[in-house]
Amino acid sequence: MVKRKQRKHDEIYIAVEQEFLDYLNRRSRRLFLQDFCRPELMDVARDWAIANQVNPRQLCPQAHDQINLKIQGMTAKEIRRLLGIGDRELIRDFFDTDVLTWYSLINVAAISLIERGLDPIAAVDKACETCLPPSYVPCPAVKQTSIRLQGLDIANRVNKRKQKVVEVQLELSWNKEAS
Image (cartoon, rainbow, N blue to C red; front, side, top):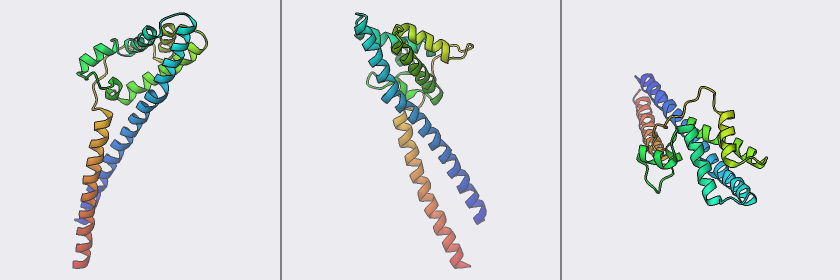
């Protein structure tokens, strides 16, 4: 009886642990995109625009829309509408790990190409050509739970599991004392 309960507890713990690791992977990819890729791409695109007498306020959104078009076949505004994401929310907070990986790879490659003098839109096109498989077909991402809500949900479930662990430990100690 005790071993069966312990086995079930171990299975639950492993499932929650794997889900937590998946969440951490997704979150770290989102943070890499947010804290490094996007700002760096905007910086090099802005620098290129200024050096080439192009309006950076038009070029930078165009570069991002080009990435969205290559990965998902639609602009950020269209993605936002399709997935029902509010104006104050970041669309990338609703993407899964694979989609975030594509965005990161393309951003890093485009940054390198722009630094070598390529026009930002052409750099995005070349980065997509290089990073995406030849068979890749742009398709809209499936909306995921926002990263923030996913983290809160996992934390709540972990706390519930901890409470159950304490209950199992108490039951085991009571059974031991009764023996």
